[in-house]
Image 1 (cartoon, rainbow, N blue to C red):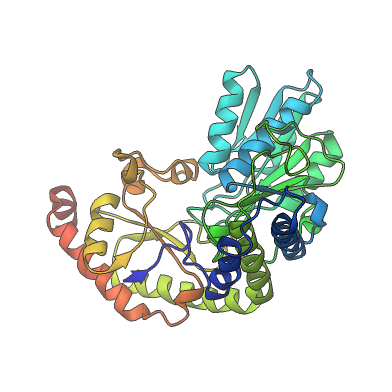
Image 2: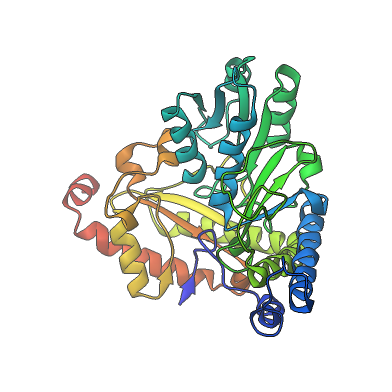
Length: 388
């Protein structure tokens, strides 16, 4: 298999598996227990907290472990507004957020909050003018993702923070799940109050995430129980997964400059080769800053689901902007927000690279894609008629 879906999930790094194993066998204790087995587990948990904090430029006390990036986003949005002044019932986010943020914002709307979904340009960059115009004394929270999961566009989060802090007392959150391990991440430099991360996007295990919560920032817990994670995320911690997160974050932060350059080079060669080999292809977000390794294209005359299935039959794993996994073919909300037509968006393809892509045979991938597209277009009457 040629795996080109690292933005969806990544294989675990060998060192991560090695680090986790003792906490699944010898050090299996509950970290809240006072006896030796509990203390050993607690030591591993706290060492992992320090590693994640170091990887993102935070303090260990600012790291809240969760069950994933989705939970971290939910805790940030719902927890922040629940703790805000009751008169501040306005939330601002963007139209291209991950569904963990979008659906949380829509849930808040149903609870009576006013939500503004900021527009983006045709490269997927949020409108800072629209942000300024939307801010008001009622604004409790602004959430703008660091890097888009479909197109890879990197948002001007530091500028967002500066605008928000100059015009309001709102908190700023960023979904940084697609950033860590791909670009250098320093929460102090970004200036955000909260940031969400997930281990499985950078060679760690699934089912564990982090909410960075700046010191003295107050949010309300969304889970109630034993009071773990400073009372903000109750539940017995998954120590083995947390240890894996710490190791993955440490490795990714140390390699980010070298790996990013390698992936940028491969992504650029892949993009150029596809454009040369296949007509009627457009690159999404081509003129904006993108994380290395993410390439989103729209291929005229094909449907995303058929494209993925045929690529899979030839040993290539990729993804599409169409929500085919849910049984529907709704076009990507990200591409629609960027001004791509529904018909064009249905032919979207995301190829995302990772640590295992350094030896990728670009020529073989492009030739496979060319064959698949040629076949699909030959049986698409509307395209064949237009092309002729």
